[in-house]
Image (cartoon, rainbow over all chains, first blue to last red; front, side):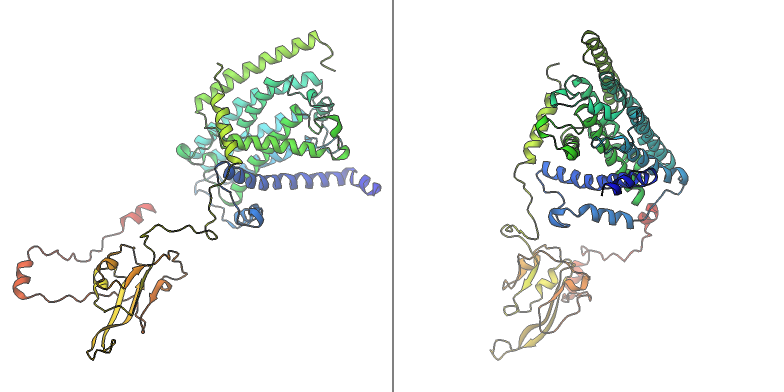
Length: 338
Length: 177
């Protein structure tokens, strides 16, 4: 048994195994999250949500996937076909790729990069490119408007998102996510969300905007620009875009858990599960994802100027101030940073 | 400043409360609620009471009732009376206006509580009640009684004109495509 596992850990096989695992994880996350989204929506609105396919409607994602696979892929006549078809891929690949640096448990991480946080920031920025490609390639007014809005929003909120990571980096002294989680060991009072509460707040809101969730879902709007950048997509290309959105939703949840809520660390030492500590990671990620969905069905959306004001006038200054506070505290109490 | 975010928190509290609250969904095919009084379901005919007066057929705005009439001594009185040997109600055309129910002199046509009219073929919705099936696709043109000549001449002025069937070009479809 041990030898089989060590063979699986050798380089070429390890690559294929982790590739399969990540792909399986991301695609299934997308399917499960669509289901969860509809169930949460239903329960919040005093309904049951989908409950016909399978027991309690649990096979609904399967039915959705079958339906989307069999649908025709319609495109506008004048669309720039290469860009039009490449856009969903350009959105999905970064959302899936960033999962390789997420540490599920001390040993279960595909690539423990020593620049993990930088990699995360860089890879997720490519998602904005996919949106611009989708809007430009469709050659449709609504698409272009949605893409421009999406580009403005994503680029604006990348600034507070990156700044809010810096406090954690300063405290840990490392860009590796495994190191970040290891530094948060020993009970929930050591997790970074307590000393970095404003940063956690900013990361949460900026992450909400990065995945285009409801208070910040300006790139798509039923009443003004219909489907936004994905108005011309149908069938599997549309499904790929949705999968990318749900994968990045889960990714942001996983990142906020890793950075601020102690990753795989149990809340108190007594609850340490040893090799099964990934359950803590999964539990926390699911909770954060639920809060995203909860917010989606409770909060009305912002106007474009309110969105920009919130990003540039509140979140960025808050980040900068707390960066200085963190630096000052570390200067006064050198024991804070290891 | 102290009020910032309070509205959001309050709203989210309400949604969370609703999430664990009792659901108001009724599982329709398994659970059917009682219909209100006087609700108009699909029509049905009590053929024993029908006197084949054809008033329902005449009054129906959608021409969905077709009756085949014959003379028969059905009640044993020794006199041949009008008898509906064929009676069809085409539910694919019925609009539940209830005019036939109002006009029936013997209250033999009435609404049931059945409202789930679905079929794979429109003709399956035509329900036969008589001994002999009637073709529901044939328009039951009500027999118009010939008026006396004098009355007809008087009525000619304000009689509704019969518009010739115009074949207007279908502009809407062309515009849509």
